[in-house]
Image (cartoon, rainbow, N blue to C red; front, side, top):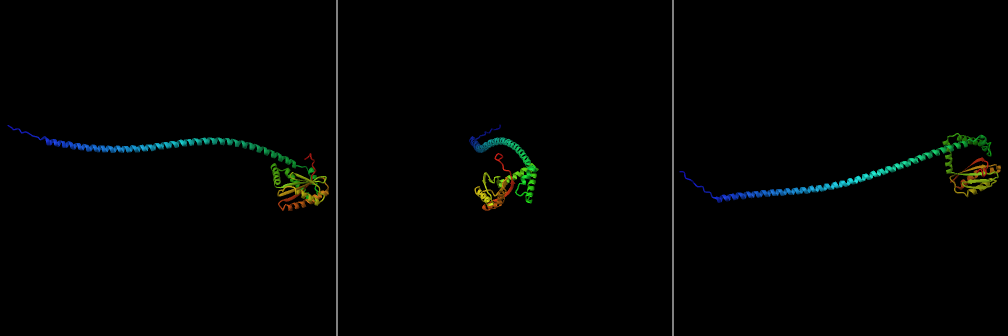
Length: 291
């Protein structure tokens, strides 16, 4: 018969071992949990930092968007203002162009009228210069010495000049008149006329003075006295002498006295003014009605 053995186990050491194992697992679990919590906390902190950074980036982006929006609005306003100014400027330019076009048209019309009037005046002046010889010869030959060679040459020159003006183009006549006008602007024309009754009539500007002189000396003295009463003349004075049907002795006093008085006036002005004279010759005396 087989004998049976009893197995005897001591539970206390096993329990202690079990407790040690459980405690070791507990500690390991605690360490693992701590590591997990630490890692989780770090991840949370990192996430919070990322969120904060993203928030800052978002704020900056929003600020940039707002700034860009404001700039865009300003640009749009400026563009609208520029467009408005451009439209207003274009309208003003159109109005100005219309005004200029109208003025140019009016000036062109006015210029055409002036040119037509100028041409008409030139034609009339041409006709005036077409003096028949039967009218011109008595006037030109009425000088004191019509038969001298000098007088004949002068008369022939005047005739040729009148014929040239009579046959000239309108613009040439106008040029001649403008030349004379420029001459009168730069010089003074004094007109001396001897009437039929022997009275000298000296016209200087708007002033007309009558005087009598039967000799060269009296002519020079009285002419000089009148000269002293007039304002300072221009740099050139031209004295034009003509006469009516007066006595030859009185005419002689004037023709001989003109060079003397011209030299005296030049000396008195210290050379500031030139005095020249020209004997026009016979010219019928005009009545007041003709004037």
